[in-house]
Image 1 (cartoon, rainbow, N blue to C red):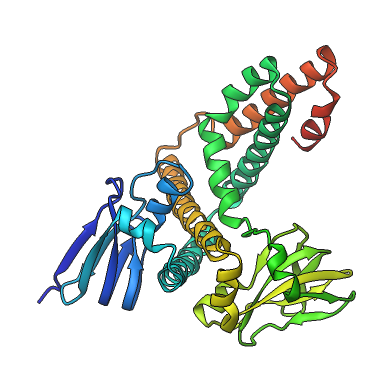
Image 2 (image 1 turned 30 degrees about the vertical axis):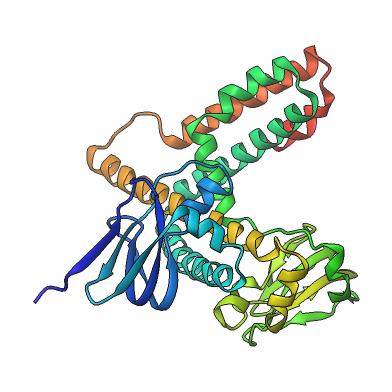
Length: 351
């Protein structure tokens, strides 16, 4: 006999509430091809879109379809009650933990789908990120200077589909950042160059905020990334989900970090009231951009499959994106010369 389900919401519907899963399991469909399960007791489901809409003023419809098993016990949480409850530590931790689980599971789907991509698709991803970063930095320059001719260039690129795709690719891999207040100064620890901060496959009982210096991320003894951005939060997933650490952290130079132990979280949230809310908001963003990314990659795979069948010789996505990068670079080079806008040179050098 086929299992019956309770539909909570569908992709592209308006988000008007969150849900409390008292007991049972919820299936979340990122696409017709990808799904994952959240199961357990007293879990907050459907918070991502509410956070994006109400806390970040980023209007979005539901990004996934969610259905619960028939035996699940579920209660609606209206938007106003959800937002008010985010000021309660236990509710906020619950929300952040479920979001961390969603980020972890959708990241696995995303990485699986990326592995299917062929060389050209990976090239498109890299070009889209380059385009996004260039336009983003251009926007930063406009906000500082408010030059009308810069606004004209910006408008053409800021609203483009390529910018949106690049943003999704970039944001899904971006790290969480937070500014530790002076209330947490007693939690700061200095590590000399070459020190091991934490080891791969050990229990994640702490998370870290980088205050200064650089940290190498090692997996299996190989350096896979370097974290240098002040305020970067590291290890929050392992701490929230009680997972083992996926990498070793080693100080590349003299490093100062704020260490947050799990047992201290409530005390720290009382000292810095926006601390855990900032992490929950960042996790919601990562979950959102993971889903946008998954859909974009799936669409690319489908389009490539159709192209292979029809032997379509029209201009490819990569060629269109390369043309957009070329036009942007030329336009900026032109105004650098005509307007003596040397401040734009670092942007064109990266395009």
